[in-house]
Amino acid sequence: SSDLRIAPSIHAAWQTLPAVVNISTTQTVERGAGPARPQFPPGSPFEEFFKDFFDRQQPNNNGKQAPRKATSLGSGFVIDASGIIVTNNHVVEGAETITITLHDDTQFAGTVLGTDESTDLAVVKIDPGELQLVATKWADSEKARVGDWIVAIGNPFGLGSTVTAGIISAKARDIRSGPYDSFIQTDASINRGNSGGPSFDIEGRVVGVNTAIFSPSGGSVGIGFAIPSNMAKNIVDQLSTRGEVRRGFLGTRIMPVGIDEAEEI
Image (cartoon, rainbow, N blue to C red):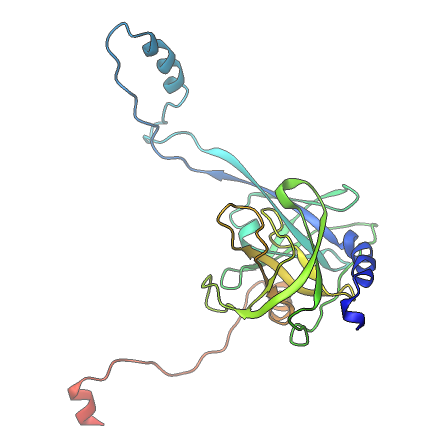
């Protein structure tokens, strides 16, 4: 079967690599009160050493240490040549600055168009100017089968664009991360920094958005999870056009039925 050949996956990786971006963010993190100062006997040789250390950790007037700048790294992919980029919500959440780095190391400032915490998706916009961006296309995740080859591309541990290959290990996985869990499970290597990157099918179409891993060690153990493309496409379309997700609801309310309520019924 042609589905078992890896050659199409390699070809698809080369075609889609320019569409995958690295995302770095900075944010201000508030810190609590400084660490407790240990007590030493008068004249102890450690007293002067620890005094210098704790003097550098002095809290401000509010009793807290001065805030610090934190940075984070993730991945994303271009879904529209005008500069629309898909990533995870947790990659850009709380970010004060967002820097998008393309495959050729060209950098742009990114602006968040919208986020959806429930599905952990976000849409970021850049202005590419005269640069012609390479955009990806969505696959139909309903047609994806367990055992199909996929290629994951992302920014693991800040190394830059990295390609890994594997198969779809399972579908509709509920890992209890949110109310809409229905993840694609894959054994393609996904590590920290891969979040928000795409998983491509052998035709080079996005079948999932890499989001989470199961790992006692913090590195890939062959159990990664991606948001199915059919779910992601719907959310991304809404975030791109109106900056939020609107979901339907039933006009009913569930409540416990006691003896009094039962008698009235």
